[in-house]
Amino acid sequence: MSAMAAKHLPSIPEARETALEFVNIGKEYQRHTKEKVKVVREVNLKLERGGFLCVLGPSGCGKTTLMNMVAGFEEPSEGEIRMNGKAIKGPGPERGVVFQSDTALFPWLTVEENIAYGLKMKRLPKAEMKERIHYWMKQVGLEQHGAKFPGELSGGMKQRVQIARVLAGDPEILLMDEPFAALDAQTRTYLQQELSALCRKAGKTVLFITHDIQEALLLADRVIVMARAPEPNIKADLPVDLPYPRERMTEPFANLYNRLLDEIDNPFKASVHVL
Amino acid sequence: MTSRRPLSWRWLIGLLGTLCFLLLWQIAAWLSGPSFLPGPIRVLLLFFEQIQTREYLVTVGASYQRVMLGWGLGSLFGLVLGIVMGRYRWFGTIIYSPMQFFRVIPAVALVPILVIWLGVGETIKILIIGYGVALVVAINIAEAVQRVAPARLQAARSMGAGPLRIFWGVLIPSVIPEALKGMRGSLAFAFMSIVGIETLAAQEGVGQMIWSARVLHQTDVALLGVLTLGLMGVLADTVVRLAFRIFGYRFMLRG
Image (cartoon, rainbow over all chains, first blue to last red; front, side):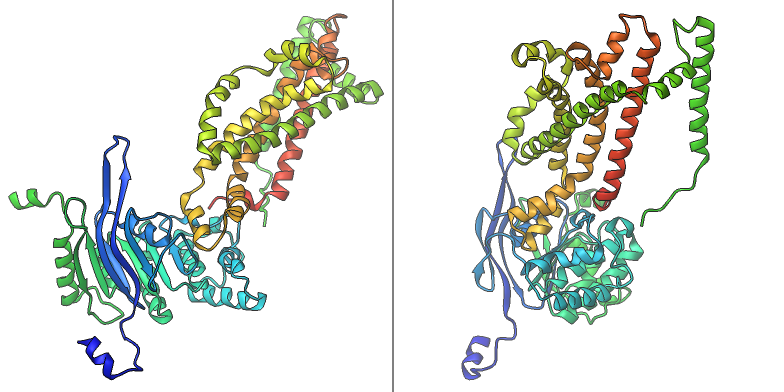
């Protein structure tokens, strides 16, 4: 329908542009036993520009592998991942990655120098670099801590540094692999709220991996559920049409929560029914 | 940035331990007679007397030079070898088992064969000291290289760093703490080897001084040699530790 309409309205850009596209993605690993294990199977997916997609699933379902392929750390065994229509080959600064582990930071560099690391390779003018670093330190609430080393920061602050470092590089796509999983509940809640606001403000396309249903519902405008083999890899794909900032204690939130809980494999589900 | 710790009780207790040890030594010396076991007072007096002589200083200088040269060159070689071993798995695998074999062989055991090959010049001494140091440092570094967090390397790659930048800017700084630890540890190793090599094949040096004291039954000279070695080791370790703290401060930080 939209294609037909577009013919009559020539100069209006398509509202829902595709930023990232997975075409028949499969990934196999060779295990020690020589049998091949297919972790990712036939993933077909399109991410809209500016969208916030959460990938939800139990451990071992291939969600991190999926992200590593987008980041360019691993190559798909089958299919192609396209960014703006071009196949992804290797890592690149247009795809910023926030890792779960704070070992991704450079402990011998200060907060400021960590954020500057990627900018140095972009050969920005000194003044602009400084301005960007300070802007992003302020955005994540670290303006007082620029001269500190990562070892002097709390876990939550270290993740803020990672987020600032990635956003300062102005990537088109933000890839986040359970960035808050190792934090305490309080810090996690703060960071979720801040990230949600930051991303909407910056208009970035986000691919966010998590195993936390609440987190997915607080952040995403679309959630996909991945399952372990032999089930189809993408088990559910649903939009989250709730207004931001999200409230946990509302009925629509609870309904979506229960629905997602049902979709995620629970190996103990059968026994619960027996009880 | 460096926080200074106040002089604590622990320091005093440490001093007390040293004094107790010296006291026991002195008592034992009194009981056994000075020619069998010279007491600390006598050894210290001899030390202050000797330190003003040219001969003693030449002896210490010769040993120090060997230790530092052997340690420095051995460390350098060990660093390079360790990085290559850690970085290229196949090379590491090939070289690892022979290294495990050589690790348990004391450097001194190789002296006779090396004397036959190289004679008794300075080269053999530096080689013997460097051998032990290089082994320890290389194994340490190889393991450290493999333990560098994959997320850190991936982060650098995704920010656009090429292989050369990752090597010098991420891999090397990441293994500096382990490198320094290995180097400091192997400094003790270097001092252990020096005595062996100097007693077996040297004209001068502290090891030679200790060994030749036996001929004239100079127990005080032998103990002076031991004291000298200890002081040399403590001094070298302090200098190295300070240098690390000044030049490597930020690299010693943990994430």
